[in-house]
Image: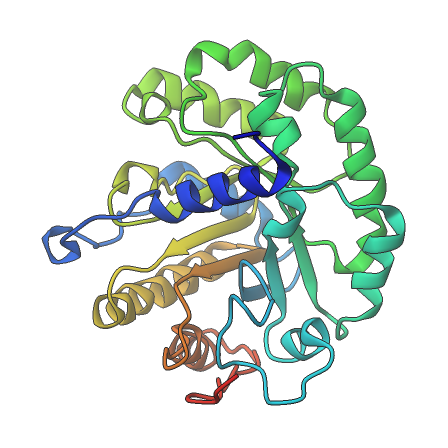
Length: 310
């Protein structure tokens, strides 16, 4: 069978959904680690420089991915979504680099103070593996920079088989990356995390290039729950386990974000990955209520319409 664009999308979505999953989440220690002193020192340097902002959202906005969320007759799903959440971990751009016209269309369909976090296309991260990607990066940056005030962070997610032996390639990529464009990076291979020297070198590179270190909270990969921030921005990707366990996990995150805010964190982007079925409650509702209460935020609530049949 030919490997078409649709095949590629299906392949990546299946593997992304499986990443970090476990058969028995009750056997996992979900406690969050202590904040390293290096992170506290970094945040203290930036304390008081700007007001704290937090953005919460999901990876996609389509009706197919958020079942039961949109009222019957909703014509513009993105506009509705942007009035219920203030950000999107924009995975759609992973499959195709958007045109400038498309970016402007998306931007103009969203509420004020909304943020897009577009994922760099897989032709850069997975197919080219950061090799000879300057033109592709320039095209992606030139289009997505048109989100302007609605651009949160662009982010690069490397495949699981991208290992530290390619450090020089990653270093060259980040050193050449267009200055001024807000960028976050995620590596997945265990070798980046299980060797303290490799991890230190990786985090130092992110710090030197003003690249935000992505924190991944997923059941089977607790090694990726690394709290060494490299900028005064936290980018967290939270992968669900079971609903009751997740509620407890998210309460821990409220306390951690409160701590970081007090230390001097400027921004937090928190994206929740959960399977949304017709009857599923959004994990974000309780989480946002706790954030509003404990961090003095004013985030909107999704108030998902449970049980609406499409």
